[in-house]
Length: 99
Image 1 (cartoon, rainbow, N blue to C red):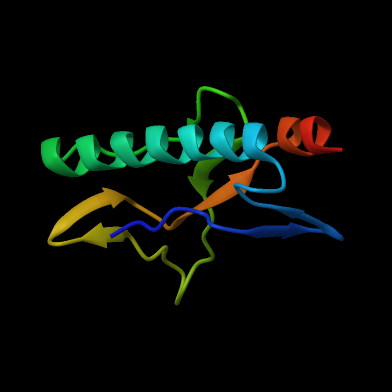
Image 2 (image 1 turned 180 degrees about the vertical axis):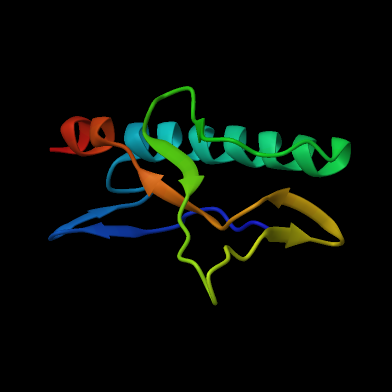
């Protein structure tokens, strides 16, 4: 199960629903969009690729190191989503919008 971002600390700036409602909503939209794409890939057994949210603030892309010379596949409930691990990243646009 994917959990939505509640509070993020960026340097000394705190972003949450109360402090930055507009940015929080855009980040939430990006997160929900990416989660929807991940669920679709899992349901259809299609391999994931880099996914960027519609607001360009959040992205999921590969993040993996080889273990014993091989990547460890990203699997969930018996479905291989990618041949290596993936992670969420904040895009540069996020920092530019926030600061």
